[in-house]
Structures are given as structure tokens and as C-alpha cells.
Image (cartoon, rainbow, N blue to C red):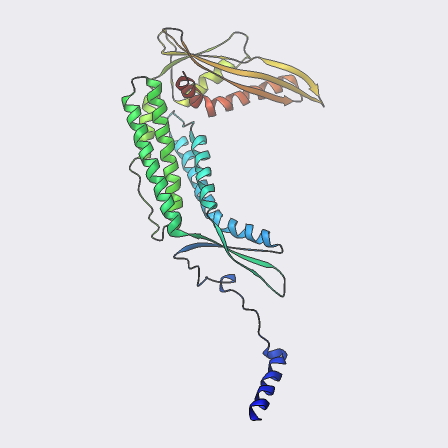
Amino acid sequence: MKLSAFAAFAFMLSLLPGCASKPTTPDWIAGDSARYNSAQYLIGRGQASAQEEAKDRARADVAKVFQVAVVASSEDMQRSKSDSTGAAPQYEEQASRHISTRTDQIIRGIQIAELWQDPATKSYYALAVLPRLQTAASLRQQISQLDEATGDHIEQSRKNSDLFLKIAAASLAVETEREHESLQKSLQIVDPTGRGTESKWNSAKLQSDLDELLKRVRIAPQVTADSTPGLAEVVAGALANAGFMIETGRNPDFVLQARMVLDDLGFQNGWDWQRGVLEVNLSEAATGRVRGTKRWTVKSSAPDKETAAKRALNQTDTILKQELRTAIIDMVNSH
């Protein structure tokens, strides 16, 4: 009888509002996660009214630390470019694409470990995690492969007798080392020690070796008579910017002939439109053998024809300064 009375009393207590069990808020909502500790995982949190949006925000919270590393690598490339004495690297764009691709691969490893909905606000909270050891092992493997590739490119540059092939291999060596430096930054983020792994190669030395090779190439710039006025100065400036030796005498190694004729497309909605095809052709001075051709489309507009033509020339200048070195190397390598 006493047992029945006690049971009844306990049942009544359970019905009281103050004694009802409350949902437990996960520890990671406002602090560290006991299950996914910072020594083993990189974690990110996301909050939103929709479940999928909360997950996306949590993934983005982890991904941003790697995106910062990509920005830092890009800044390093630009710093290298500005510090270079007359030979600005034109391959940083390719390296940036490779770096972004590798960063995307890291980000795809981010997992949603937990999801919780606040019963009061109905907001969703997501916890994203990235295992440190697993990610670090993958990065070290990629870095090792890049080191091996850099060594191969260096060896190819040393062995080749063709100057342009030497330059092409040296350019690839610099590019792969840029990738290494970016992955090293990512590895330092996930490595519990924060050290990562050192490169076998000196990027400054690789850049210096490439610059010296470029200075050995003597190129005479030429522009066709029917080209847009001002093109000759643009081409000469782009060659100097790329690090090649401009030959003004009679003994160049190569001749770079450029042509661009602008077509006036007329006025459209109060703007004058100009369009043309910029073409550069590289040939051996001694034999006349064509080593390659590259074309770009140029299009500009302005309230008047003269300004539109100037803008087209400025666009041409930008294109050549950004891409001429890579274009010349690619033209040679394709033949």
C-alpha cells in the first residue's frame, strides 16, 4: 500500500511543469565540442531558419580559413611580381587556378557532424567538422608529389638545349613551387603542431633562374603597317615587362610580329564600338620558321570614336602584359 502511494506521488510530481525534462542544448552551440575537440578537428558552426542553409554556413565557417590561405598565396605571388626586376611572372594565374582547385578538394572533406533545432526559436544549428590528421596526411602526400614534380621540371630545364624549352620547364618549376607554398599554408592550419613541412626548393632561387633564362632571349618586336597607331609601343613594353631582351640591332634570335586593326562597329545607344583581333606571330630570325601564333579579341566602347580606340589600345596593353610571356612559351612548346 505504501508502495502504491509513493508511486502515485512520483507520478503527480512528473506532471508538474517545473519538473518536466528540458531539451539539452549541445555543448558546441556556445563553446567547444567534447566529442569533436579542437586537437582532432577543425570545426565550424552555422545558424539559420532553414536546415540546409545552416549546414552551408557551417561548412563556410570551416572553409574560410583555407580561403584566407589562398588569398595570402595570391598576395605572395603579386609581391613576387612587384619585387621582380624587369621580369614579372605571367604564370601566377595558372598557379592560382591550381591552388583554388586543391583548396576545393580540401573543402569537400568537410562533414556535417551534428544538427540541432532550438525548440523555442525553431532555428537550426549545424556543426561542420574536418578531421585534422586525415586532411594533413592528404596534404603531405600532395606536397610530396609537387616536390617531385618541381625536381623533374628543374632537371628538364637543365638538360634541354632549346632555350625556350628550358624556359618552359623553369616556368613550370616556379608554378609548382607556388602550389607547394599554398598547400604548406593549408597544412599549417590543420597540422596540430602548426609546422607543416618545408620545401626542398627555394622559390626565390627558382624565380631568379627563370629570370636569367628570359634575359638570354633576344626578340625584335615588329608591327604591321596597317595596325592601330600606338601598338608598337604597347608590344615593346609588354616584351620588356615579360623579361625578354628587346633586340634593336640586326641579330635577334626571334621576331615577334604583331597586328591589330580596329573595325568601327558604329554607334549603338549613344556609344561608339570598336572591335579587332590582336595577333602575335613568333618566328626564328635566322630561318624564318614560325614557332607559333596567338590571337585575342579586343572590343571597346566610348561616347566617341577616338576614346573607344584608346580604350581598345589600353585593353591590348593589359592583355599582353598579363599573357605575352605564357603565350610565347606555349607557342614554342606546341611546335
